[in-house]
Image (cartoon, rainbow, N blue to C red; front, side):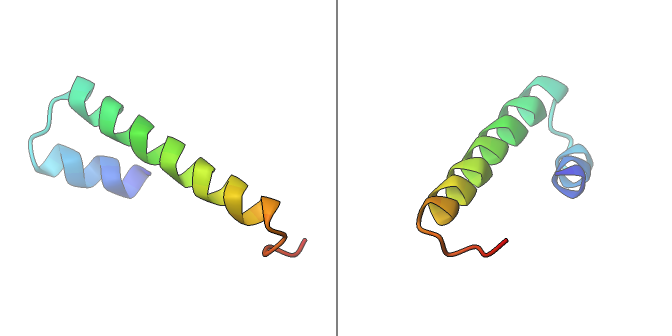
Length: 44
């Protein structure tokens, strides 16, 4: 996430827009992880 934030900063993206995009990405990543865990694909 920090890397993406740095890329967005270098692109000149405003802070509010960066926050919105990073939040969407975090939600998407959590959804993928939850789906994978629910299918027992990840082994702990």
